[in-house]
Image 1 (cartoon, rainbow, N blue to C red):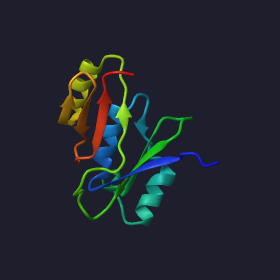
Image 2 (cartoon, rainbow, N blue to C red):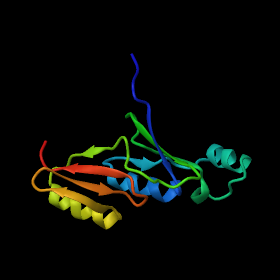
Image 3 (tube, rainbow, N blue to C red):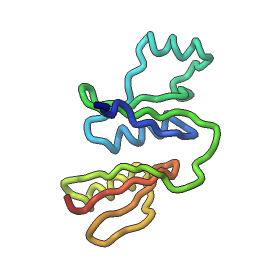
Length: 129
């Protein structure tokens, strides 16, 4: 039986988008750049982690992980897959997400709000469990 290992997000700027999602998701962080990872990047001509073409966001011991990978083309249409997020205090969480750089796409009063991350990828914050 298959299990989800990673969720991969195509994007134009992996490092800042990975940092955004690491802040959004409880307990997640951008994977550290140890000597081995920095050597791997140098081997492909990348000398600054800010230019990393594939940035990992993870919560140790949990799956799925999130990879943000560089693609040349911009996002042009609505996502075919998106995340639904829960929060103990949805109005406070909405304010926090907006402070991180999310934007409101559409609000469904009392049910959920559709948001977009800094590159326009849609996700939802649910008001009810």
